[in-house]
Length: 461
Image (cartoon, helix red, strand yellow):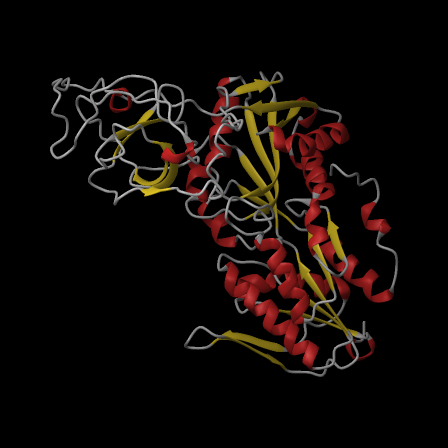
């Protein structure tokens, strides 16, 4: 195709050579040259973009793959989009195979929906359309004020299974959690295979430090930890709304001798909460303890697991609530409390014995869950284990963990550059999806329907 008469340009917004590989493959399929531009970081880490050719009145496609430095890649995309907007480009279409921050698409406590923020930033920078692939949640498309084409990588991964996995007819598709069951079901129905779903989590064995049965046994006494005043009563606690306090606690796992269990309150600790983590809780203080800040709470985290809270040495004076509007319950009203979730031990619903297990997901980043899943499937009799995912982020020690695990092969697409990880772990294989991205660019520029790229695609895919 003649570049000067094509009516569109394709640019890469990456400043690293490894990230321009996908852009090079797309332009080769389109028969055009990659637009001339310079993207680099100045000495003070500011992003600078210099477009080397005219883009006035043309459709501009910016290909941006996301390396490990996610925030730098986002700034490169924003700065280039704004530079093209101010250069009078007709339309600016972002080709972002892996959309960053897609996991932060829900409100969690006092956090924010960062994915929505990024969508607003892209629109403000001048983008008028986005081509992406396998969004973490399809509802993310609603965050944008312009069209979004969410392509699917499953046809390429299904083709890989049929062509590269010997005896795939003896395989079973595995969802490593119930949330991934729909995707796994889609693969299973298209390959005419069985489906297995894993549920629950590994149960940690109770430690001696958790229940006080450490060796040598501690000496029972009533003095407790030096400088810590312990309550001497052991009766149920009832108090009015005026006795609600907000207390800042510093979690410690040290079992102080002589501490009794006080059933003062129940509080959910976030998963992964470690020792020396500061949390804020609402507690009811009985009249015996209202004048003293030296007492101990024991919190039930999981079944027969307790944490000990030394208040006197780490907490300032407790703040008393005097206004019921400040989240304290109204006098005489007992509000129902949502019961905390507790997952059962890991169970596998489906027979994987003597079969090839194929775990499917959209993103593989931290691989600890995948490694644990592979070990359980091996124990259940699976003789080969494959992992299929669209986006292979493979952060931190993922290549080493995969290499040392029971996983036989990890298959991902080239939406994210991972050549370094492949050198560290030969088990990682790549499927090229540049073909569908190039076809999407051609159809959008020519005003053709995109329906061809979504043939036989259902809501669950």
